[in-house]
Image (tube, rainbow, N blue to C red; front, top):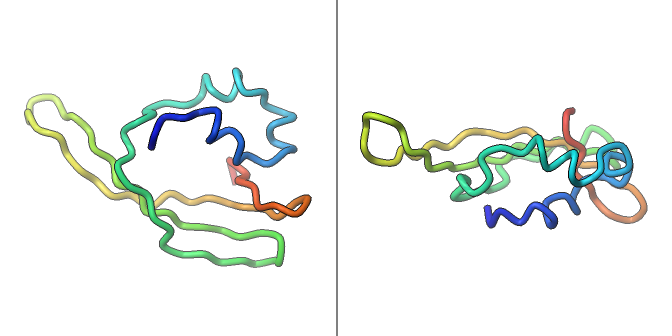
Length: 93
């Protein structure tokens, strides 16, 4: 939400970061700063070291012809893995 891409990149799993360096990952990030709120809605852990998380993300977007911002809340699905004593976000799962 703060647009701190370096901090966000730090949550990615070490294996993912080895495969996708920061500059390459950053090129695929769009819409930085439009999130207004994010809160965990559900967590399901099919294994002790893997959790699937649903985050409710509220975004604020300017829509042409409406003249005022639209606010929308959408679920975002994430997979987190426990590795090396910490939890890490694993994109694309």
